[in-house]
Length: 154
Image (cartoon, rainbow, N blue to C red; front, top):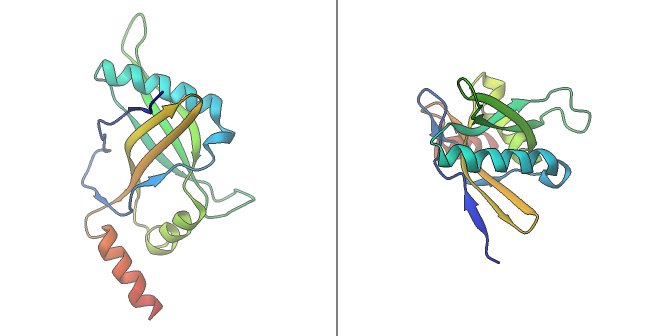
């Protein structure tokens, strides 16, 4: 059985954004499997019906394991029998610790907003993966952010 790939419509939040990270994977999915399954099912349906879905990054400063923690929430418009579709949201995992630390140092500590662009979901048997790009306003793209970070380290 090959990998099933979906959720590739590349939804971006409103406003102007540039990629400020390389393609990254959501971590901790294995601890959030029920929510990941529900999110994946909702994305499949939303994609077929041309409804909105994507990822949202949520700061978690009270996280006892890491004050820089950034939760990843998946959301999707879910059709209802009567009335307009409604949005549902699931906590599907976290940004990796190193990336979260970089984002805090380079952007969040300077009050620069971040967002996420879902690249794709994939599943094989009961293994799920979620890949995304972190977004920031223009002027904070990946190459520029890395160059500034290297200048600070020199």
